[in-house]
Each structure stands twice: as C-alpha cells, then as structure tokens.
Image (tube, rainbow, N blue to C red; front, side, top):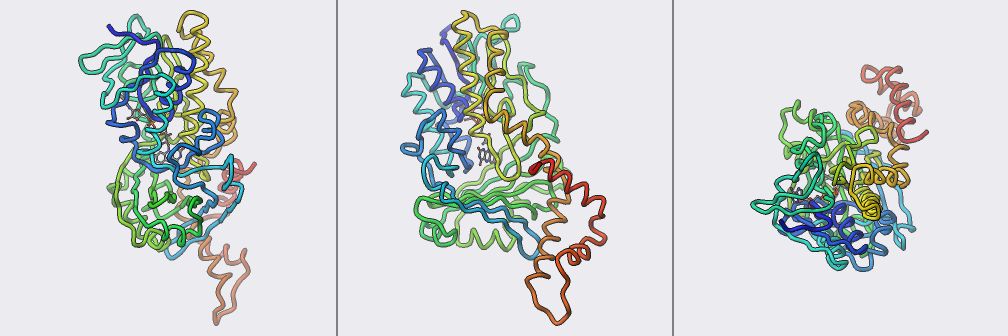
Length: 429
Ligand SMILES: Cc1cc2nc3c(=O)[nH]c(=O)nc-3n(C[C@H](O)[C@H](O)[C@H](O)COP(=O)(O)OP(=O)(O)OC[C@H]3O[C@@H](n4cnc5c(N)ncnc54)[C@H](O)[C@@H]3O)c2cc1C
C-alpha cells in the first residue's frame, strides 16, 4: 500500500491550510479532492474575514483572486412593503489589513490549494475518498475506489456533511434542528452598474445581511458584491423548510420578490445556482476533534460562527487547520499520532480568537430560531418608521406610542421583554 506521512481529505480552506503548513514543516502530504478542481463543489460566494485568514496566508490579498474589499455592511429588516436598515461604512476596510473580501470559491479555493502545492504537498482532484481505513480503532489511511493509501495521520477536512466520519462511527447523527440549508445564486451584473448601484469604487464593495421575507421560515438572506457579479442567497432552517412544504428555490424566489432585493439585482442574469447545507454552528455543537491517527478541521467539525452580523466559516476552517497542524507536528516529535498526542489540537484551538469569539456569542443561537425576529419585528419597525417619516391628515403618534399600537395582538409585553433579554444576551451584553 502506498503511504504518505499525512493524507488530507478535502481541499477547501481547512484542507489547503493544513496541507500548506504540514508540507512547509517537511511532511510528505497528499491532498485528495473530489471536485474536478478545488472549489468546484463549493460554488458559493462568500466573505473571507481577512485578518484571520492573513495569519495563515499573509497578505493573501496581494496575490489571491479576491473580488472586492468590503467597506460597507448593511443589516436590513425586510417588511412586506419596505425595509428598515442599519448602515455601517468604514474606510478602514479599504486598506490593509482590511476587514473582509468577497470571494468566489471556484476561483479562491484553487489559489488556496496552490499554496499547499507550492509548499510541496501533492494534490489529486476528481477523486472521492470512499472511507477511512480503520484498524484496531486507529485510522491508518483512506480508501478511494480500488486504491488504498496509508498515512501516519489523516486530516479530515471534508466539509459540512462529514459523511466519512459518520460512516466510520466517529460522529453522532446531526439533529435537523442544528442544520440549515443555504441556497445561492451568482448573478452577473456589469462592474459599472455594481459601482453605481452600491456606491462603491472599483475595488471596494458592499455586503447585506437581510432579515425577514423568507416565507415565514427562520433564517435570513445575504447579498455580496463581487467584481462583476452578486452573490445572493438565503440560509433557512431545514426542519422549518420541511414543515413549510416549500421547495428551496420557491423560498429564494419569494425572497427575491421583495422590493429591496428586486431593485438590488435588477438587470442581472443568474449564472449559477447551488444549494448546500450549513451547520447552525455554535459552541455547544463542537464535534470530536481528534482520535487515534486523525484530526478533524473546519466545518467537518462544525466549526462555524453565525452571530447575525457575520457568518464565519472560512476563517474558522483555516485557523482550526492551523491548530490541528501544530498538534500533528508535536505528535511527530513524540513519535506517535495517538489520540493523547493529538489532543494538543483542542488545547491549541482554545487559545485562538475564534474559540473566544465562539464563546462570546454562544447565547446568539436562540435568536436564530426566534420566529418573531423574522416575522413580527421587521413589520413593526417598518410601520413605526412609516409613522415617523410621514405627515398625514390625521395627527401622528410619537415612536413609543406607535410601537405600542403596532404590537397590539402581535406581540405581548412579556414576549417583548423576553426577546429584548435574548437580544441583549446574544449580541450586546
Ligand atoms: C450559503 C452559505 C454561505 C456561506 N457564507 C459564508 C461566508 O460569507 N463567509 C464564510 O467564512 N463562510 C461562509 N459559509 C461557510 C463556509 O462555506 C464553510 O464554513 C467553509 O467552506 C468550511 O471550509 P472547509 O474547508 O471546512 O470545508 P469545505 O469548504 O466544504 O471544503 C471541503 C472540501 O472537501 C471536499 N470533499 C468532501 N468530501 C470528500 C471526499 N469524500 N473525498 C474527497 N473530497 C471531499 C469537498 O469537495 C470540498 O472541496 C457559508 C456557507 C453556506 C452554505
């Protein structure tokens, strides 16, 4: 059986980061990717938070195919007839070390994998790993079609579905409650139109987080500006979607019919459509990170943060891969890739900022399933704003009186107090 020091399953942000770091340390690394090219199974648009990513890929923005530096973030609540937004603009985001870049995975992931190859890792694409080879409770390699490839240690970076881990009995079943479905479109639009419509320069861009108008299903939407396209999508809870009996594309179409979204994508042409599951993320959901002869990095270990303002998975994947790679290297020094030696991964991870961010926002998760947040409050905020911004022939109320009037029959004072407490625990206090 052919053998490598390390076999890595998956060439996403986690796999390529681990591959590069381990190859740089002189290990003989094989990366196996089922897509014909890295990123081809990951067609999503997304935001890469640059300061974290730059810890692994220093100043990546100088050579990586990034789309736009995001300098404007808008959080918009969508009601039936309009929207209420919070608009955040920062010039810091336009210069190094930046805050976030929009990227297209079909372009970005091959660049990540190339960094691993340049460091000496071998990448094979178009090959699916069918199973982990396990002997006496220890992972000793992988099976891909008829081929068995041995490894001192396997890095499982297979992404969100983590079927190999499930098949090997190395993770529990996921509860539908903890999984969402992301449905995305890439919509092409001329660069000039994007710059005029989103008030940005040739290199900067805008990101929207959109709450409401997802057919009553808990979740939200996003819109990111790329160079000459938009990434538009929704992320909705799978159990609610199932109960609604609606097809994912129907929910996306309904979302796109909102006046704000319609205006933002007007004149664009859908060039890609994809759907992918995404974990709700969360501190309480962390999977087993290591065992005899293996470590798990990135979203295969459910490492993801969604605090409403940001959805972070790629930087979590890279930073966790670095923590895992350091554990692998210290296990190499000890001469054995035992679970005890690889447990340093968890210790390393606990020292990272992502782990602390995760802990800080652990109370955000109940918010993501609070229906009133998606259905009632956007409408309420819109109606109160409409009262305040309008002059009509009847005398108008002050904000609090307008809110009280709007709340009648929709949300009780007790619910409101509970929700305020939940919001403040989740993202404020
Ligand atoms: C709709 C949506 C929007 C998102 N938006 C953002 C965002 O804006 N910012 C952000 O940071 N994150 C975002 N995320 C999350 C982010 O995509 C993931 O957290 C991130 O890609 C995880 O990286 P990874 O390397 O762990 O896994 P992945 O990127 O999923 O990579 C896993 C790789 O393994 C390969 N693979 C899987 N199984 C096998 C096998 N058996 N054999 C060989 N290869 C295999 C896959 O083809 C894939 O290339 C979003 C997710 C979704 C669904």
